[in-house]
Image 1 (tube, rainbow, N blue to C red):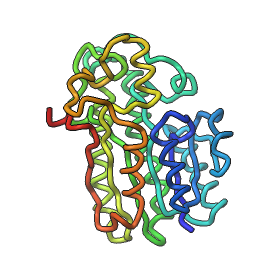
Image 2 (cartoon, rainbow, N blue to C red; image 1 turned 180 degrees about the vertical axis):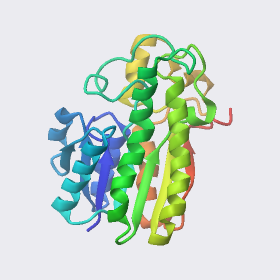
Image 3 (cartoon, one colour; image 1 turned 90 degrees about the horizontal axis):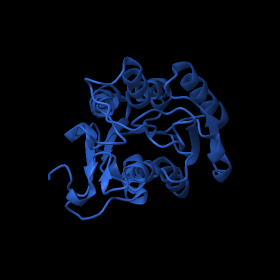
Amino acid sequence: MKVAIVTGAAKPDSIGHEVALRLLKEGMRVVVADLYEEGFAALKQCFCVRCDVSDPSSVEEMIGKAVKHFGRLDVLVNCVGGSWGITRRDLIAAPPLGFRGLTNCSLEEWSTIVAANLDSVFYVCRAAAPHLKKQGGAIVNVASIAARKGIPPGSEGSSGPYAVAKAGVMGLTRQLALELGEFGVRVNCVAPGVIASGRLKRVLQITKQDHGPEGSLKAIPMGRVGTVEECAALIVALCTDDTSYMTGVTVDVNGASYAA
């Protein structure tokens, strides 16, 4: 039976949570790695491990526990990410007010946001790779439409460093696909647009308008935001043998927002 690790899956209104549930339905054993321990009780079928993915030692410990518990690793989904951070408080709090661009963010904000969104993916992929190489498998990273378009100045609930970090995730995906291809490990990326997750709900609570963190919701050609279910379905497909010759690509799921 295949074993999957999903980071950032403990919050019930997140893409990662839905991915974990769908991988269980696929018949996989699922490890949930997250800081949000309050969400573990709702994932009793999963092996839940507290992990700060921006800390390489915490990541190594989590991977070790997962492999020791199940004896192998076949799938990794990196769903952790945050426009303003991934600390315990950030997971439940509203985003800070004010736009943080590359020219006005503090060095601490830059370091925190890049660590949460790019360094974390590197740490987890690096720690998981030796185990995935043993029998092949799949890695799916989660980027953002922000990496394609940037974040317009004045936007609330996102940041310039977030856009840069997510672009880095796309580059990391392509490079890992080249390095791991000979071992039968596929590495792909999904770049969501505006998705009706808890993150969007918290942003809309402070803006009180039709503006999401990546721009106006009215500008989406399909006329609506996406759902966590739609995004998770694509991620899970990339974890299965249905996409066995697909690697090194980033798939956009944004209602044509990138083309608009």
